[in-house]
Length: 143
Image 1 (cartoon, one colour):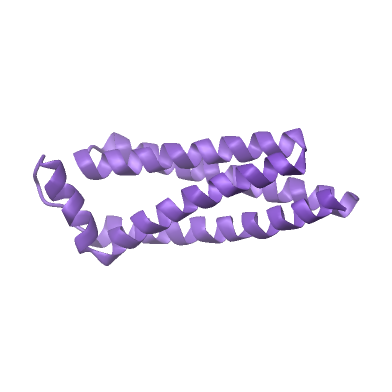
Image 2 (spheres, helix red, strand yellow; image 1 turned 90 degrees about the vertical axis):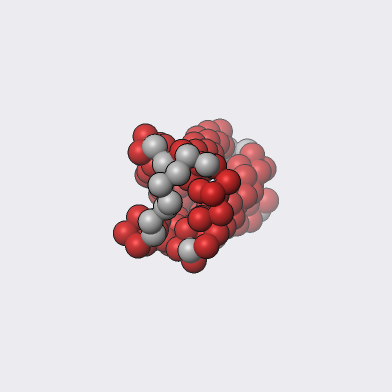
C-alpha cells in the first residue's frame, strides 16, 4: 500500500515535471527568438538584462522551480525504495542541475557552449523523466 501511494505521487509529480519542462522549452525559444542581450562582458549588466524581459525572467524562475521539483522527485523516489526509480530520478535531477548551470553561465558570458550545455541537460532530463514516468506507471499497473 505504501509503495502504491508513493508511485501515485511520483506519477503525478513526474507528469507535472514533463509539462513544466515543455513550458520551459517554449520560454527558452521565445527568449532565443525575441530577446537581445547587450553586447558587453559585464556580468551584472547581463544579469540585469535577464530580468528586464518577461521571456528570460519567466524562463529563469521556472528553471529554479523545476530544479526544486526535481529534488522533490529524488526524495519521493528514495522513499519508494525501488533502485531503478531512484537511479533514474537522480540522473534526471543531475541533468537539470547541468541545464541550470549552463543557463546561468550562458547569461553571464553569452558563450554559445553554455547554451548548448543547457540544451543537452534539458533534453536528457526530459528523456529521463519520460522513462521514469513509464517505469512507475508500469510498476503501478503490475501491482
